[in-house]
Image (cartoon, rainbow, N blue to C red; front, side):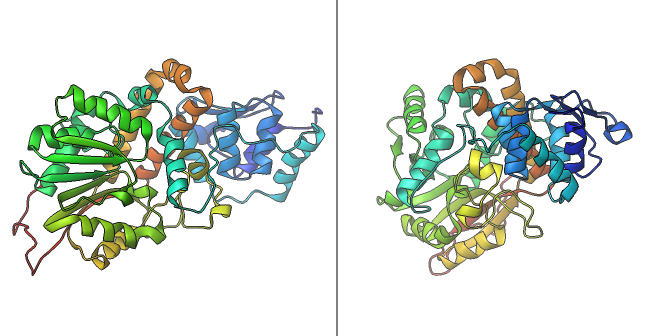
Amino acid sequence: MGPHHDVAGDLATLLGGAPPVALRAYDGSRYDPGGNGAGTDAAIVVRSPAAITRIVTAPGELGFARAYVAGDLELEGDIFDVLRVMDDVRDVQPSRASAEALAGLVRAAGLRRLPPPPEEARVDGLRHSRARDAAAIAYHYDVSNRFYRIVLGPSLTYSCAVWSPDTTTLEDAQSAKYELICRKLDLQPGMRLLDVGCGWGGMLLHAAAHHGVRAVGVTLSREQAELARKRVAEAGLTDRVEVRFADFRDVDDGPYDAISSIGMFEHVGFRELAGYFERCHALLAPRGRLLNHAIGRPGHSHRHRWQHVAPGLRRTFFDRYVFPDGELHEVGAVVSAMQHAGFEVRHLESLREHYALTLRRWIENLEAGWDEAVAEVGIGRARVWRLYMAAAALGFERDQHQIHQVLATVTSAGDSGMPLRPVFS
């Protein structure tokens, strides 16, 4: 690169002209935010020309994410400070001059388009077909049970916890979430519970041990199913709990008294909502209850990371590196789909702030166990998880993502089985 180039300055211009975060580049150039960056030591470090190539050839969050995952770009200091800047400039349109300046750097170095990092998802086939859904689930969940234990902690619960002012540990908050769901479902000894997307079995273990239910869990992750079965055996609950490595659409042994779906719904496509809830309804006994616990998108804004767009146009970091084919649904559409399927919706609760707190604890776990995590899954995958969880935490804090628990019943001849004034918490 010639001395006339100023990589840090050109990148600052690309980020809106005066981003409140320091920039340093491989050519020795620097950008100091001055007063704009008060109180933060965060910095974006461009370690090689490959980072510029990735940013230029995939403008927006995807190019920056690829550069970070590949190690061509580093995020120093508090990752939340850096990501706040990136989120604030998400919709900034770069000037033609800044874009051409960066493109000129690429040309001067003789660089060509780089292949994506190997961690980027590649799923083929018909969208939301059984084979493609299985591949998408395996991509995210069959990473390493040991890695997930580092991030999630002993509870191995990969969904939003429920916090209170006196909660001190993540494990207590996750137990409180399971107990809240059990109360909403009114689980009683001897009832049959189906847990859709059971993960490593947390809900199954809690419901069987504390409420005496007979529970079936299904998951499309082979590694989850194997460890969940082991945890069930260790808890001495094999007579009451069954874990199936199977597609929910193949469950045909109803009726169940209750169904819980916790953190699985994001993998159900918009076009599959009707069929999903119709299947749940068919599996439930009269007065049976469904608790759908799912991340959603706000209705007031289209600035969210998972959108209903044609698969070939999805260029977000979340879709390429985190949840391929994942879709977020606005809670009003979810309620409507449930009622169209024959359910009566009885209760809705938002847990948005709770998920931000949960994600921050997961990030603390990951950063505390960083060396072990990298040894287990590699530096690229560890970077993906650090970036995605921090971005998600900010999304929940800023109401760019939401999460709701929706409770519905199979009302029969006007009988919902619900008390007049249910109290769940």
